[in-house]
Length: 114
Image (cartoon, rainbow, N blue to C red; front, top):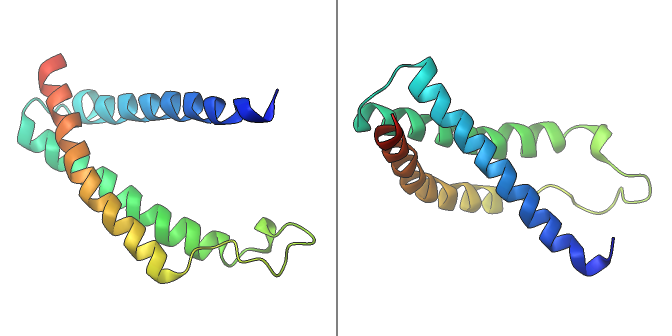
C-alpha cells in the first residue's frame, strides 16, 4: 500500500464505521426501545450521542489513556499523547452542537423508515 493511499482507506473506514454506528443507534431506538415519534426518538438519540461524546473525551481519553502505562510506546515517554483539558472541553463542546443536529437527523430517519 502506498503512503498516499492511506487517507482514502481512512475515509472508507470512517464512512463504514459511521454507517454501522448510525444503524445501530437507529435500531436501538426504534426496535429495542420501540420509539415511533420524532420527539422521543430525538431525545433518546441526543442523550445517547451526548453521553458517548463526553464519556469518550473525559473517561476514555483523559482518565484511562492518560493514566495508563499501557498506551506509552517505548522511546516516546516524553511526548504528550493526551490532549490538555481546555482542548478536550473545546472539542467536546463543538461536538455537542454537532450532535444536536445529528440527533435530529437520526430521529427523522426513524420516523421516515419505520
